[in-house]
Image (tube, rainbow, N blue to C red; front, side, top):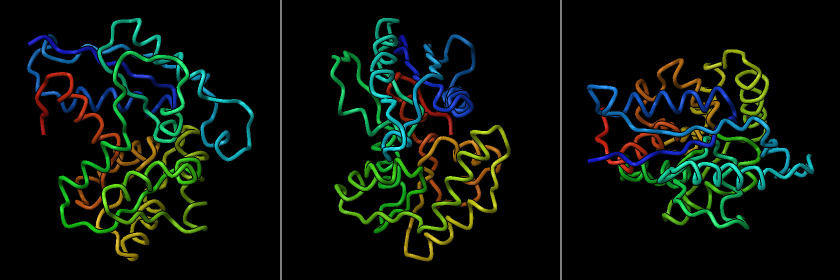
Length: 238
């Protein structure tokens, strides 16, 4: 069976985009180059900051950039596409352009992954940017599934933003211990699973193997990569 071509809208941020590509290769059950998934990557680092716009701290609207990025991937012959940014999903139902290929949601994929693998969960914690939290994209999806959504409190959320922006996005090593404290604080509030809902946090997971050590941590990017492997007609290598 010929594989479908995957479109990846990246640059948001650049390191997380590279990590997603590595995950797709890692989770594809392939023994030769030719058995891997063909992909087109448009690494648009000029997409304005999504959180700043959602919070009213910037007038630079990311939407036209995101629309143009998906159109470029469609024109390049992609059969489906993703954007490697959780916060950007706030804009996906606001398109004015007709995008003719399906866009796979990292939000729906991550929540679906929790429901499938932790069926008894009642409350899901989400660690993400201020923009993702305020947009409510995870909260709506989780509550639609009949579950509760919990996010970090004020001090913990400040720590999350510092880790994302002043560490990983700044090219520094993310403070895993600090992140795990936020995870455990959410666990103490009854969260049966905690989603790493920012692609920069996925980079910390990759560096520290958090999802291998803790079954209750779900990396949204890992879940998305596995989903894309299946949608492109390949088997997932666990």
